[in-house]
Image 1: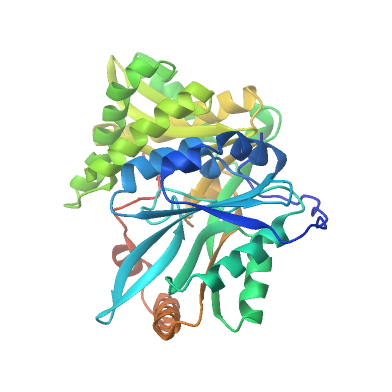
Image 2: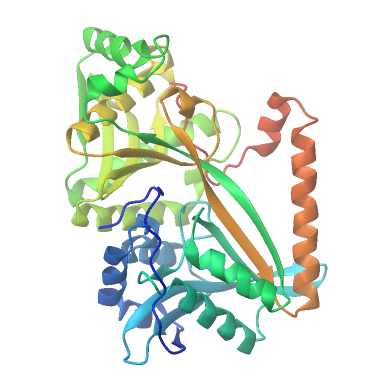
Length: 406
């Protein structure tokens, strides 16, 4: 099974085949009919991620897909073998006063997904990119194609960008940072990689917590407990944001529904790493992660503010890190966001690639040009405003980056 993180892998040699055929699935049930091929492609490709699995994307579509039109593309060779899948949908916005139709990857748009992309057989990346651009050229019902949080070194993205430019389309790309800890074989070895001034947060505070409370840290293991446990996560996470007068991520009924659907699917596959911290019988901390191959990824967490002085966030993260190292994880992925605290845990920076292009549509080209100007202005603003003001302006309540302030 493929890992979430991106690291150097041997580039597959292109396979010589005739042009691929493209089938469009207009509803999820039709796309689900290719689940066996889908899973086979994921297993073949070492750069695939958990965010490309049918489990993640089906839960996302069921929660967020209302009023969206699916365009799931199936790429097949001359023998009818499925060699690529592109789960896409269309959304409609306006600019200014004119309708804009954007193609996006299923999973994008809600702020929940990272490491999205086409699912392809090794060696078919260029063929799928060529078949996709040909499909786009035939379909005049789009203005922008926006592919977000792709692996930084995505071969499909490289070929798509090249073919789009050759077609005379406007192409823009940006990068989004993410941070990953490369875990050594043992907990003591990991602790030794940390700065001496930071290390006690993961050793001394957990011991102090044990001396003051009856402590229990347990992983969610039963489907019948998920509803109650997720409500704990939602409540604890919301406390931080409602205390600031903001709605918080889990004010959204769609997101709560998504977490429940996704959690059940992941638990059944053995992927869920959902940990809860109990002090004197009260659940006061939660860390919601999942494991895919040798990578554990952190999606969300929440802590009771009345225990801030006890540093319960450090205690819970230390327990989770020690446990996943013991059970063979090689990477702990903080996912998107450039928060400074992540580096203190020994994380290295990686990047996602965001690729957008517009075809012959004048509206699409103008819209993409405006988006680039807005991004340039934001970059300029970052160099002018103090960090505190930037943090206030940039706060996004749809998906807050998990923090380590507890």
